[in-house]
Amino acid sequence: MISLGPYASFIITSYVLVAAVVLILIIWIAIDHRRVRARLHALEEAGIGRRSGRSATDLK
Image (cartoon, rainbow, N blue to C red):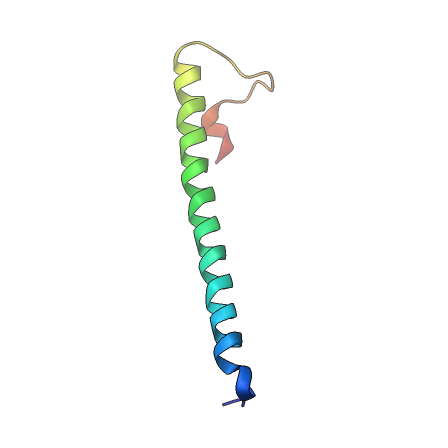
C-alpha cells in the first residue's frame, strides 16, 4: 500500500466525500430524468405536443 504520510486521514476523507457527492449527483440526475420523462408523457397524453415533433418515448 502507498504511504500517505501524516495527511492520510485527510486524503482518504476527501476521496470518500468526493465519491459520495458524485454518487448523490448521479442518483439525483436519474430521479430527475424519470420525473421529467413522466411529466412529458403526461403532457402528451393531455394532447400537448412537442415542438420537435418527437414523443416522450423517443427519448430512450
